[in-house]
Image 1 (cartoon, one colour):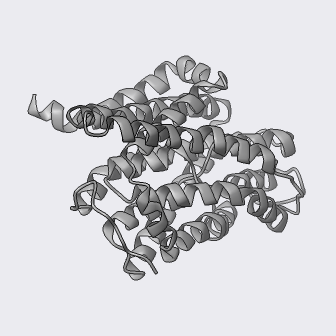
Image 2: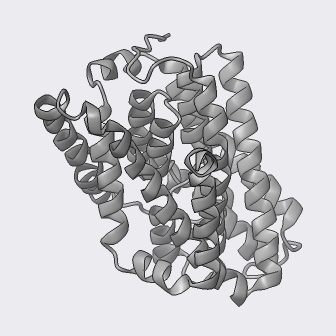
Length: 330
């Protein structure tokens, strides 16, 4: 019983992976519904809003070293590494539309994306990291995607794309700002009375992470079956990209002397990429590339699986109580 209590999340991950591989229909339906994933993201952020002390947001807004490191990793380091890995792992690049060119194009669509909203915030909370920093960084990353994603794709591929800025702001309002605001309202009314239920409340983001993992494996299973040889190339490139980003963020955060909670936020927010925006860019501007969704889906699975395995180690490094004020700022 003690074993199950301690390792239930790892066991549940194995079940989610197995279900995604053997029974992918449910995950594919969940993703294609159009509303299920945003609702789950909103639930995670409502819980984050409930547990956040927003008085610390102003303090973390001055944590420029950590914020700039996350943004630099997302929009500079990741694209450079992805370009190099595409050259290394992909087929030889020949004429436009060749296998190598399509491989590079698909990898750059992935690398040009903002950090993910839901899983990075949920995992930061689970690991007892700096949630306020994670929230600020992911919001900034998502807003800047309207400018930086087209710039990266223009520089790397020569393609001109337009990211709908108004749509991004509306998405941020509905999926991020509103749920956090509702969570803060609930905190003012229910915080003291909810203390006894907090262990159960904190389990909900873990369960949602498992649903994301199941959905990701469900999508990847279909992609792997459609083009197994090329999918293995993409899988190798995505795995290397994520491991390199984890190593870069960990080392850079230590060199900048960030405290453990902020280091956790930097590692998780800097190494993850959003899936929905990437799919939208692919379908609107690169639909002629049949492999455009492959690295997006595979990287989504890789980041969920590896980062979930890291949560225990990250939580152990954050030896402060969850409510401690982190006042590190530049």
